[in-house]
Length: 294
Image (cartoon, rainbow, N blue to C red; front, side, top):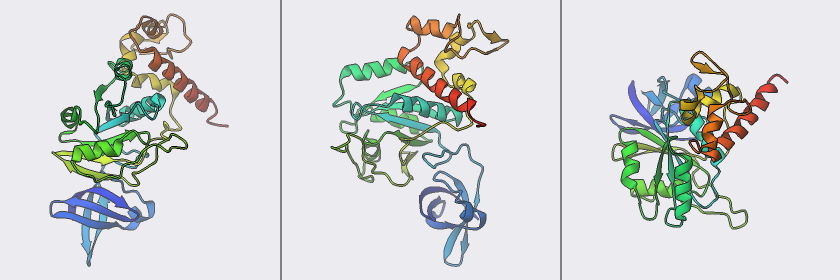
């Protein structure tokens, strides 16, 4: 058996990067029936006649649904001034990334056409939450900073359509490996250009071009009381809330009195925009949780 890394999957065929080179492999047995092979999987392949087959999938560090990839270390969340950013989506991706042990990094693309205030406001909202890198696929601004975050790691790009994920990937790889799209003139929404996930190795980094994230949601069984644990900026204040037991807090930071997190929001220590989205997301999750047995 030869060990390798799944770098691309189309239908039932997979490209696997091994010590002997890249081989086209097929799934067999239960793996074929379940379709349980993802880009990023570490696998064992065997030669059967003229073909290679994937005989084993090794234990994963993590596994994502959208995109359908595994063993991700860094998630670059890409936004741009156009189309208008969906910051609720950004916050959901941050939560999802941290749930899976992935470091989220926010990339503000298209800074060549962005107002300076847009960049500054976004950086302010996410200060202390995650690293924010202003960039441009056109001017290659801060390309070196992006590579610093990916060296020796596997990274994926996530975000709405037409924010420039494919253009950023082309910038990072120095190729035109991905088709780029733009906004639909009719809907002003992005047109999808990436149709399957693939790993490209660049300067010691493994970059996955993903299939969207535009409809990402948190798990159906997500307990709303757990949401606060993925908002790191709340932590220094949560322990001062009135409703707490021992080292934990029972305060949801939404309607309770004497809430130190809400006080921090009012005093400008926590982003009001991000806090308001937290409340919306908490209420959505709470409603789903109440109806889970209906």
